[in-house]
Image: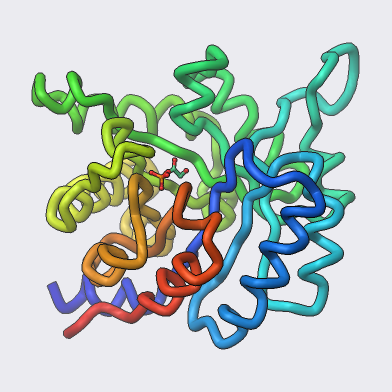
Amino acid sequence: MLLDALTKGMRKTIIAGNWKMNKTPSEATALLEEIKPLVADAKCEVVACVPYVDLGIAIEATRDTNIKIGAQNCHWEESGAYTGEISAAMLKELGVEYVILGHSERRQYFGETDETVNKRTKAALAAGLKPIVCVGEQLWERECNITNEVIARQLKLDLWDVTPEEMANIVIAYEPVWAIGTGKTATADQAEEVCNFIRMCLKTLYGLEIASGVTIQYGGSMNDQNAAELLGKTNVDGGLIGGASLVAEKFAAIVAATKPAEY
Ligand code: 13P
């Protein structure tokens, strides 16, 4: 237990906003201008994952600040005839640092599979981006008591062929599908249970030392009211925030709620 708490203190806490398909470029600039002063003293890494068309303006708006910019997807090929797609190298050259991959909305609405998540993850790593790889069970899978099987399978497939060295640049986000945009948050204990299980899977795949260093975020209706309790859990190292990341004060309150585990 003490060891768990100590290793939490050594991990990077990351609060990332997933803006999804919200904010035009001018709206994005305005929101970032609001967020900037509110998170200037953050004790954690602060990331805004914005729509593709907002990336350039977001990178400009956050230059010389502590806010990092992320994208919400990337293609796995370096270039070619893939109309409408964006490569990892394009994002990297722009100054993007993080990229969300395998979000449940992409799995649900856009045919994302573990195989394509894996290809995207490899491509993102090769380009020097930091993937935030999303895993999570659907409600009926939880009700059928197969949450662990679902998560273990996703991790194994999504991280296939990712090397131990590359794991230093990977963030895992646990996002139970039933908690996304529903106002139905996993309890802090539920979040901790699965985040702890994720770390056990990583230990099986990569060993204790690497597993202890991976940042595992929780996502799903995290807000300014429930963040402190969720983030206080030993294996919850941050949050991937949807709705609440679009309101500067709420996002800043979540950032302010990050604190080391008690021990
Ligand atoms: P909400 O915070 O709106 O539930 O969204 C969570 C999410 O999907 C973050 O990626």
